Amino acid sequence: MKAQLYEAEAAKKRVEDEAQALQDQLDLANRLVGGLADENARWKNNVVSFKEERVTMVGDALVSAAFVSYIGPFSASFRSGLWKDTWLADIESRKIPRTNGIDPLEVLATAADQAVWKTEGLPADRVSLENASVVVSCNRYPLLIDPQLQGQKWIKGREGSEMITIQLSQKNWLKKVEMAVSNGNVLMIEAIGQDIDAILDPLLSRQFVKKGKSFTVRLGAEDVELSPSFKLYLQTKLINPHYKPETAAQCTIINFIVTESGLEDQLLAMVVKFEKPDLEQSKEELVNKQNEFQITLAKLESALLQNLSDADPATIL
Image (tube, rainbow, N blue to C red):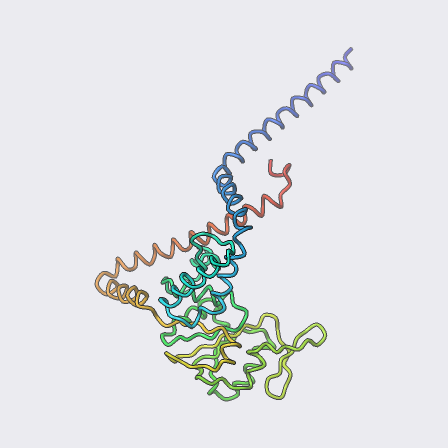
């Protein structure tokens, strides 16, 4: 009888422990569901929008690809008229599905991406954001029309102090290009004229030859091994350069000339900084915090989805 009693008490203890574990698990599940209520609403909205994007993706991608390929050299007013009035009207006439009120900038870059660019030194006006979206999306090497050096400043802030900057008028510039190509450095050739040295044509045209597992490119009389991490930017200070069609085909030309609205914002900031430096400093701090919050929010959302996807349900609860 005592042995049966001990067995019954042990069974009772196991059942009570199991019940308590299940209750704790249920409490944790309720806390998790409650904590993710806002995310649940956002995910449901995303599911609806993703279903719509499966249909409209063709037209959106078409407009965005054309935007990256052709819009760069033009001014703000010409850009707006080109894609809003000409391209969208043509897509509409061909009955290609697209998102109503599509904006190529929103397709190419999220709010978090734009916030990162601003923290790297990019002006906050619309044209500068469009230019940045083209730079990060294009496959051809970007050629910046940048007399005010705004684009160069942003590229330096983006790539860091390790970026190599040269001019074609320097001695041994070709040797520096070869080293950058083989070592996988970020290279900026600044202050170029309307004619680019023909030695760079194979590199700009991406005439890469595969040898074994690596690629080579001919620079002058030598074949240089190409590192996958190599990046190239070209920059000119000319206001209205006229490049050959071959150059336009080899590079993605991007007009970084300051716009009227951008100049107004910069001049206003300079006046406020002179008249009321405390107010300008407070504004800069608030803008930087807002950009940081957008970047952090995007990282947290991505990390949350990744953790929920990777974690075992039993581990979560």
